[in-house]
Length: 222
Length: 222
DNA sequence: CTCGTAAATGACGATATCGTCAGCACTGGC
DNA sequence: GCCAGTGCTGACGATATCGTCATTTACGAG
Image (cartoon, rainbow over all chains, first blue to last red; front, side, top):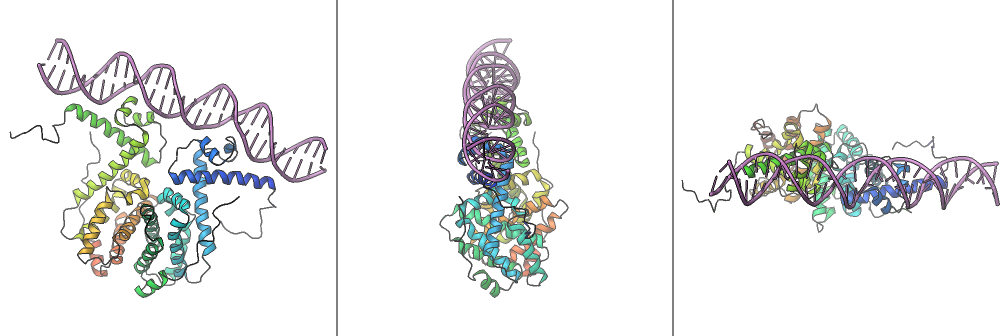
């Protein structure tokens, strides 16, 4: 979401609207659980039960189940974007920014498994979504290319390779619970950097530089 | 004349069993259509209608809808494997084999859009499936590594990057119908080859070598 | 405290989907 | 031509799911 500091459209959230938002959030979170489990056919009543919310409440917020699931995926993408924004201290070096986002996302699969599964389920669509990883990746890739640090002909191709690699990585980590997520992620990051034209030495350094921790994420809410 | 009917694994498909298989195939093909459209909740009656088959026939072949969909994805993976086997004339060079399979799969997105969409929908699971691309890719990757032509530490990581790239590519081609699929595929193939340690010159040559045509595929059956 | 409003609730009738079953159609053997 | 077998068929009762709505609960304002 674009930041608009001035025009604050939040005229002091009443307790009323806070309650409403909480109900909605509970539904969204429940839906994410079902998505993560692959339970896309769960009846509405089951979802509202899981959200600890009355059956009728569903229709106060969504018209159809698909709408809820869409909102759930959107929310997951937003959450992912928030992770990157929160932990990615701004760097003026787009290569560093790209590398850090990539590595953080790889680690996310273990740190936030439910989020990871929602992203995996939403599948290849997140590659071209305008939320979450994709738009940031494209931005950073273009910047890195413009600065001459990445020698890549087509940013879109670089983008789909990087995003696809992250999806594949997530699936691999899901299948092999004993694998070291950080090592695998950094290895792939290094390989991709080299593929994008960074020298082997620099790629190795960039992909193994210290990283802000993912531990200070607020997974649960009221 | 030297026929021993007993030990024959295919005891000469009767017209009866052929009819049964046709019914099943019709159901599977119909299911693939729905999967490609993202219509995972289609009622059984709709599916049997689309298959031009009586409603009750469904239960002669499958217990649940999920079972049918699973069979549909399996069939798509098999079909994909068949493409690779049919058009991939055996080469003793694993690098060539790998490259050809990759490039053929990339072109498949345009040549067989429905198959492509089923693969995209089945999403990241095809990366670790034991059918279709994945097992072949792993086999060829290992062979290429063993022969010293690929300098890769971890075949599994190479595998998920390649498979993820193909998924991303498919999604990209879906979103950008005007893109040149062959050019994009070959570009990515070349980049991956370099990433796997092949020299730039060889990678370029391998990724742009002539390819058997996908045109002689038998998409429809009786 | 009282009132008006907005959201939450779950019971209920309407609808959609399921899965079975008894009869039908095609097949192969005699 | 007839019979036994196997799969196909669609109508039907059983069940599951939906979406509404009258009622209740929580809140904020005056």
